[in-house]
Image 1 (cartoon, one colour):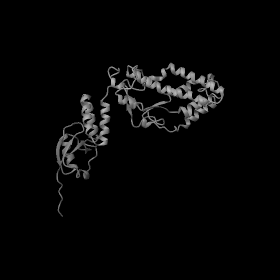
Image 2 (cartoon, rainbow, N blue to C red):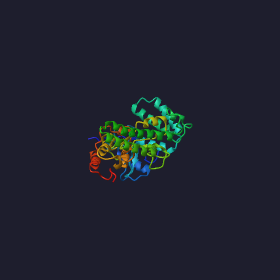
Image 3 (cartoon, one colour):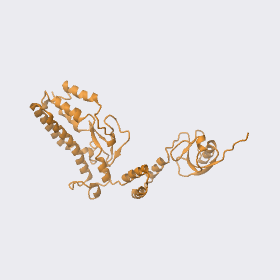
Image 4 (cartoon, rainbow, N blue to C red):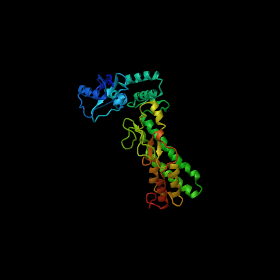
Length: 339
């Protein structure tokens, strides 16, 4: 029986910490590891090799299917490799290249890129590179203010107004509930409660501080630079997709941020407002702890900033919270009633 001799396969090999590549020829993985460890001065025990492109581990059988001069990464026992794209992006970001040059290059590639996924990556890259978040005034970044009234001279002033508008709309929904009240006395007490809530909200600047990056922590929801992070859907502790955005960076980002929601975890229309109405059926507004309802309606105690993808529009399945609120209403708990 004749022996079958394996032909040496030429590959390019490198370590995970250097860019320099070396040409190595080996008939199998065992020989490749032996030669590679000697060349790169790595311990042979526990060494393994994977594809540079995506981190796929190269087994003995897989090695024989590789094309000549495939780029590989040699790793010691405790090292891992996530793939060349991850590495290259990390290297690019660490070089400190001027973003203008990188932006123009990305735009150039985008103009001739037919593949949908690559276009998406390049579009996101262009959007993030075209970052002028450090600029604040209309004079510095006039493009950012397209469609914004002339009275707003800074980005922070407009973002504060943007948040105020959202909170005002919640107050309007409270007032609109008056139309559903049949009993005159209850309607009168509800109007008093609404007026009290509005006055408190007005004194707090309608909580516009949440979107204003010039505010101090923890009043603002963003970083000093203007970055907002999705807080996840109403039933989650965090956003699993790690959504983030800086509406201060560009006109496009500002427009897209308008699709993010300040979502009530315990719903205002299905739970909070009905609970307030029920509390006023047999009590005067002066007897109600309006601070409790104020916090649920207008503050971060019950509001979550969420990316449009994380915003679940259906009924919030938080029955335990809803039942607890109504239980407290009917049981005259101290958190709802003043004594």
